[in-house]
Picture 1 (cartoon, rainbow, N blue to C red):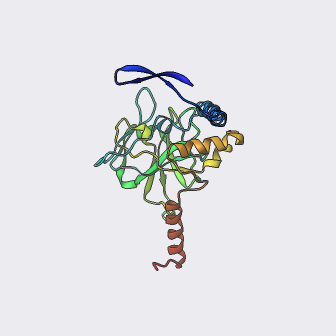
Picture 2 (cartoon, one colour):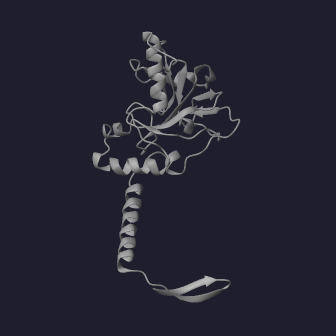
Picture 3 (spheres, rainbow, N blue to C red):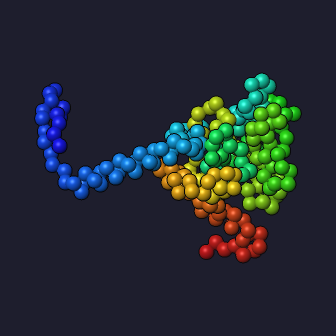
Length: 231
């Protein structure tokens, strides 16, 4: 291989030898990268994942969530940083148009307050453990609330931070219920590429919740049954 190499303000000719095996391997790698980029461009995980995951700002203590209505939007004030924010593949969580996953996290219930147009909110499914309060105008889920005092996550509300114009929210840290996107129409043949894309973005993938959250659920259950032990 011959060519010019720019160095110290001038171009100098260079010659290098690459073995046929090395060149073939490089070409295979180029083909793989091309296929990977094509597959990545064929689906959207979620805008806040596709375009780079934001890190939470130190000292950030919340902001305002707003539905997507052009006029008279529902507004919800949140007075805390989000916790356990994650990409969720379940069929219940609200997702932006074209996204395979929602991005949802939790905040203390007492830090959530509807400040504008509460009359537009309606619970999507009153039989669900999480009562998702959605705007009847645009369908956006503003927050999800648990009314069952015995639920492991009672006292926490579920929110979508992408509905807030403020920056500083913690981005997602893992992906949950990944295989559930098959139930909402994603071809199973794409799952390997989707899991790899999530991993490449720094999101460990689970087909339930993260280990930390599953431990919290199990701890709650053990305490309720009287079998919990500290050591």
